[in-house]
Image (cartoon, rainbow, N blue to C red):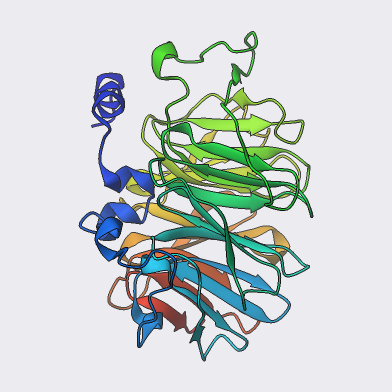
Length: 343
C-alpha cells in the first residue's frame, strides 16, 4: 500500500512501529521498549547478548562495536569474541557511527543518544527525550558536528561533539524549484517523513533516504536540502554514495536504483528478489555489497548490469554488516552477530 492516499493515512494515524526502521518491519513489531525500562539508567546485561537482536555495526582501529535491543552494546577486537559493555540506557538502539579518534554515537528509541570517547569502552547519555520519536540513524560529519535523524522528521544537530543539541526542521526545495517548495504536492505532510538513513559522500554531498519514496541531498554540508526526484513510491531504507556522483538507493521489495548524477535521475537495477534491502557496504574497486531480509546478499560491480545474488543459510534477516579483510561478512540482525565465509 504505497499510494499517496495510503501514505497520507500513515501520517494522520501515526502509522506502525514497523516503519521506524527497515529491520523493524520483520523483527521488532512486537517489542515494547517501555516494558524493559525497569532501570533506564542501567544497561541490561544479558548472557549471550551476541545472539540477541542487533541492528548496526561500526569499526575503528581494530575495534568493532554493535548495538541493538535493550540497550545492548557489544565490542570485539577480533570479530570473534564479544564483550557486552555497560551503557546508561535500556532502549532499543538502532544505529551507531564512529570516527577515527574513537568518538562514537549510538542512537535509538525515546530519542536517546549515547556517546563514547574511547572506542566503545565507556558511554554516557547526551540526549534523551522519552516523549519524542525514535532516532533511526546518526553520522559524525567531523570532530565537532554530529547529525541524528529519525521518525516523523526528527533531525538533531550538535556542533560541539554532542555536548548540546539543536532541533532542526528540514525545509528542502525541489531540485529545480523555489526554496521550501514541495516536490510532490504533499505540503501538509512535507516535514513528517521518517528519515531512515543519512550518509556523507566523499564529494562532500550529504544524502538522506526516507519513507514514501523520498530522498534528500545537501550540497552545503546540511545547511540547506534538496528533495530529489524519486524513482519509487515505497520507502527507502538506505543510500550508498559511491565514487564521483554515483549513488545507490534501496529499500522495500528488493528495489535498487543507481544514479550517475548525484540523484538527479535514477536507473532501476533488477535484483530478481522482493525482500527488503536494509544496508549497503562500499567496497574497494568500485564494488558494493547490499544486504537485506531473507539472507539476501547482493554484490554489484561498478553499478553496471544486474548484481550477483546469494542467500545465506537459514535466510537470516540482516540489518547491517562489515566486510572483513579475509572477505568474510560480519553481520548483525535477527540472529545476532554472525560471521559468514566468503567461500
